[in-house]
Image 1 (cartoon, rainbow over the protein chains, first blue to last red):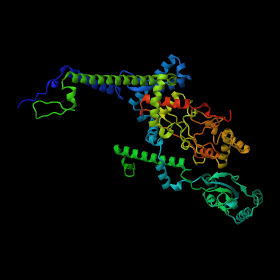
Image 2 (cartoon, helix red, strand yellow; image 1 turned 90 degrees about the horizontal axis):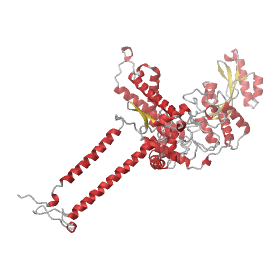
Image 3 (spheres, each protein chain N blue to C red; image 1 turned 135 degrees about the horizontal axis):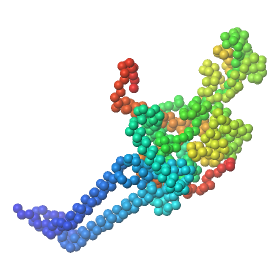
Amino acid sequence: MSRPRFGKHNEVNFPRAMALYALGALVGLGIAGYGLFTAQGTSTRGVPPEDVALVNQRPVLRSDFITQLESETGLKFEQAMRADQLRVLAEMVNEELLVQRGLELDFAETDQDTRNALVAIVNQQMIADVTTSVATERQLRDWYDSHRADYSTVGTITACDLLLRSPKAAAGAAGALATAHAAAAALRAGQPLAVVLKRSGMDNANKCEDNFWFAAMLHLGDELFAQAKGLKAGEVTAPVVLPDGVHVVLVQKNAPPVPMSFEVAHDKIEGDYKADREARIISATMRFLHQRSRTVVANDYKRDYQP
Amino acid sequence: MHSLRTDATVMQPSGDSAARGPPGSPHRARAGHVCLAIAAVLLLAAALWWRREAALATALVEAYPDAIPGDPALEGWALARGQSAFAQHCSSCHGAAGEGDRRRGVPDLRDGDWLYGSGRVLEIERVVLYGIRAANSKGWRLSVMPGYARPEPDKQYRLEPLRPSEIDDVTEYLMKLQGQPYDEAIAARGALVYRNQARGLCWDCHGENAHGNPAIGAPRLTDSIWLYGDGSRAAIRRSIAEGRAGTCPAWAGKLEASTIRALAVWVHHLSARAPAATRTSATP
């Protein structure tokens, strides 16, 4: 069987082939070298242009350097003396060396301030992406639809807390109660507050302050607030005996919470949505950390310990 | 195209290639050399372009940031790159043209008003690098607008909530500072709350004269620029009642240094080309 003849054009042009081969090898080496010597973490004698120094391969960023220089000198970078620039550079290099030494000495194990700072920053770092992310309108709408009860205005109330202080009143004596009933009736009848206070000898304990509902609940107490929050302007509670005396509450204004629309509650929805995601991420991260750790609990706590 | 007849002992070109001469002819060899030369020229051009890009990127990050707008070559290169990076990484919040979104407290980057710093490229770059409240201690995260209609207005500092009437009073005071219609008696009460040393503490961040504090991101309250809402009484009241704390991601370690600087130059450019008269101050 004879070999087919392909003619002169199929003869190997050796010099050209070698030249192309060498060219290809050089291009390949160039690409590989560039990738190798510019990748993060590569040990190099050169300082990357964005850095002003490398300390054991840890960069000192030019932007940080300029900011620190301006902060220390109170001058713009261009106006700062060369000596100041070198001094700040030396400080920053020293700081980096000391930080690295601190890591070698494992101060995270022994120094409480370091531990606090690490815990705080790791907690923040876990949720940073969520904190700075933008939720879609669809996500927010879904959240709103499933948590509608959480979105209402903050109720406000202006209420006068009339108090009859006396040991007998605090004990719920009939005379004290009768005085309080008479005061409540007078208020319902439309008599001016000042007149009722004078005739009954009761105090205006809270000076008729206006408050948000949550604050009014604290100031009036749960029992009085429970009676007052359902009243309209001009209405009066029945006398309530408490340890400090008999109370009667006159409501001057009351704006109970009203549901907020999606548009009005948008900010709050976004905040709550993110807070929920942050809580989930923290929880998931802690679960992961527990799973990959080997924590041994002492016998006296082992039975009840819950990670 | 030419076909090879494998059943023949001699392989012959067919069709058009026959017209250009047989393989191995001087004509075909010349064509091959031309192709090689074109490829070499293209490769050289690509290498030169890449070298120029790399040199500009290096020059950009080595330059003093505030000097870049005065260097047409560097600025031009940074603007082209910054615009593209802005479209890719920032426009989803800040808008395609940097117009912001006052519903979400995203600032208008074109108005020449700066919440943090004074609009220097260096300061903008710090925000791009380390973000705002983005879990980076080098970033801006000092201040938060407390929500005074909440049981606990601020998570970090112990502050008492304000009463509804106090919030109304401060709102009225701010309407006065804005040069909008206001009630003098209510505004006077609001000024007292604003300057109160124990409650509210508005002056502590926004300053005695309400000119704000760019070192901590406390906005000026005497101009017509609003980060949230439209400056109406209802919108101002809402900010006081609910509090504010916007965020911006930190891009350090996520984007190249030259891209971050280019972004800073682009944002500076957005602001610099806007009419300077956007900010109007109602009070000196």
